[in-house]
Image (cartoon, rainbow, N blue to C red):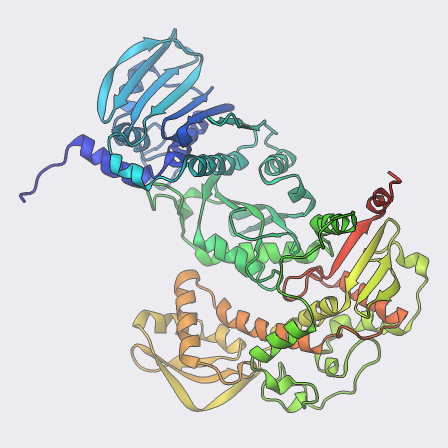
Length: 626
């Protein structure tokens, strides 16, 4: 076929294939236009899941009559200056309206504050209708009917009406979180209405808007984030480790007010919560990144949901560091959902409370430990001489008094010494009632510690709690010094693309701190001479390639650190107080005090809660006193 120029309608339909994926995409583009126009109120009406009708009405600045024809022309916009790197609005490409008009019946009715009247323009499948007078209040109303009627093949890829309506609702909620000072209303053909009243632009107003979208339980189970590094500011809220979801749909991220779905941000959130969440569970987060528009590229895809940072390592490090610091500074907190589940279990006919984490119990821990292949840490083994020991401990020290097992002596570190010293000292019970976990009153079924505070009852899983304490102490010991390594008899040569080999060489000093010694070995190869002793026999080739991939993606070497942390978690599980171990009152109180002093002790290494708190008011309600 000879080369020919495509028609304007065909060009717009091609663009629509990228910009307009489903009705929710149309709503996104129209709502963003309304917000860019300074609207304080946005109303959305849909029918047929958005395929039959989408109407978005705002009270923004409006479009002058003389500019209506330009508004529906391709690559015409009022939001972009001469600098493509200085983007301060949600929209800027000038593609949305002509793309929608090429596959649907579109009408725009608008009136400015200074205008004598409103005007209307329409497009039907790419055919532009003349401008005509109309009646309307200040602002703009955009109506889209019969979406994809001009490209019927696209209709085959649409889901059912309910699914499309749900996607639209999720899109409106995602945008609404970033604009708490704007009132949003979404009405559908099923007579359901989503109303999000304006809450104000203050931090309190933003949290109130988050509660409207994510539920009233989130603020009670969230930790505030506020950090800044090298011109990048991070704010928002993250859930405490014991408050999780089965998927990542409630992880909201915003860059300069723009809702994004960025894999770097998602990976940073996973990394920050790596050792405090159960497998296949996800944190609930709302994070706002603010930075110079010149340091982030939002013009990656026409949908504008992907972004690229000039310094991805800086952004990832800020997110991981800020979240971990916030979790550490928040102290010990239990999710309110745990108490709600306990209350439900106590009520007549209530189902037993089950936390959505891995199977609990001694056997599951033992199975996980055996599967790790760390047989050198079986009960009775000589830990000090094991080649897989976590650090150079020299002669094995005698077992300590208190609640530690014999193996626990190997994990003794200074940060917990002061708390352990209290195990043999009786403290006044009245003084302990004012602490977060209170005074130990009893041990139930040789595994659960029952404690009392001034206004609540606390039930602690002794094995899960001590497992977290041992893990944190062991992890601090591992990362406070260079990780011991073992020399390979013969260097392992790993062939890699030249750019991967260069990246690994640039990070060789950091890798050496984690016990992995490597160096360049000619073009496109590295020689590995040392591996972390904790890993034992490991697949060096796969480890190095995984590290090269991670450095290419995120400019970090977290893969190696996470492997070492997983082994430390397994060792901590094996070396902690076992279920069925009788504890003295002093030992139980010492464990509670250690939990209060240890960050992240609200969950064990597997993400299960270590304790549940039941307020006195809830107990009184169970007995009909309130």
